[in-house]
Image (cartoon, rainbow, N blue to C red; front, side, top):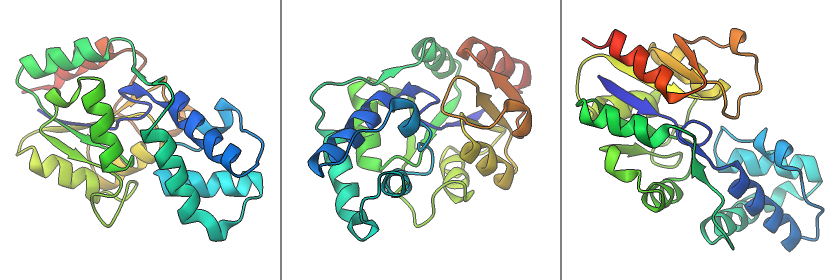
Length: 215
């Protein structure tokens, strides 16, 4: 099976590092910090969109959007400490899927350089033969193009997209690809209101579903 994974909120809990980077940028601009819950609610549509929401929320100047985005990216890629870790059971699940011969890729709205850096730091790159980030193509999720591109580079056969958010659910729906929703990610919408083939709160449930639905 071809399996494309979202990254933030699906495989890794990166919200603490994103939160720290946003607040470092706000401190640089003499602006009070935001809560972890507030910043986590902005995750999913890529860094430029997130920074736009931060600007709206804090009253910073939207004309400085590109500069502020680069400041957040700098703080994210040069943290004072690394807070991001894989979710419980993720590494074991990826090892099981890899050993079983499933072809896996990453389809994320995170900038590609930051994506590779995080995958390398957490020793996750070894599982994925394809990685597409938010700036790899002209279009980002929820446009289906990044997902269809990821899956096409994984070859042919049955496919699955695994994600955690409204953006991921919409992307899979637009691409007409089965969707597995990780319920402990950064989603704001109730599970029942998002189209999905599987909702799971631990990777072992995902493994069982894939085993039952693989040819």
